[in-house]
Length: 191
Image (tube, rainbow, N blue to C red; front, side, top):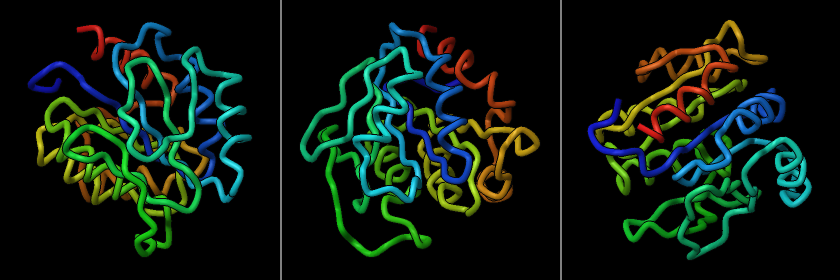
């Protein structure tokens, strides 16, 4: 468990992510006391539709992350297409069009690294199914800053490369089947 109460959850996924996010969001408590921030490599430029698809399964409101917005507890934020999403030291979102990282923009690593610097041991980072290794370096930074790392069991992932890469580089505090992740997050956030 983290050294201080959970302040935020960050989630990264790519291939197979829509289904995985449906399972995760359906399981999160509707009274979740922290924000959840997601980077998903959707390949879509219309994040409005993606947010609507997620909202259909979520018990929490789902919004596209916007520049200078301070994430609110109980809201799910999704990184906009074509921008890196960062969390500034002030706790507000920032968007960047810097070069792609690991062929991706938004990059899971960029979100995780900035969130780790902001929330430290109050951060929980989750790596779900995906076909590349984006998120592994960011997960290392989360753990180095005292945060908690949760990785989907690769055997339960539609695409195992992302969770396998995260486990190989960063390890995990918890490696769980997809269906077990939301219950753990609920317990951690209400501890």
